[in-house]
Length: 179
Image (cartoon, rainbow, N blue to C red):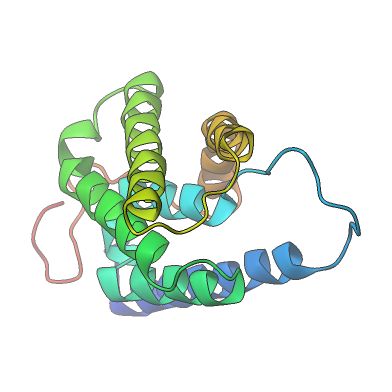
């Protein structure tokens, strides 16, 4: 039976949006009243990259754009900037997913790391160009480093608990063509 039946694809798309809401809910909870000197990882971006790498059909561009734009609005970032850069990074990874399907995890991690670094650097450059106050460099670097370090754990959760695995050469997509 086809692993990517229409029902499963739509269920996984809805699951990604639900995961987005859950991540944003916990991110917005007022658990600490004093500002921290470090920033946590961007878990939503890491999940989006992991899903884009493993099953591009589960996270189409519209779903990713909605999730990242909602995150921009709720987290009080410049609306659309991080969403656009993250969407470009995820779509870049989707275009490479087929060639990276047979690669080992180290190659995947390096590729994702380059995308995370590129998106973070691009975000800071655009903010500097339009003269918006930049977050401190230590906050950006801690978020970047922790995102790179937490990616393998997110892949493990995605693979084992959520069932989002890399496609095999014999798998078919929703239209019936080979992955």
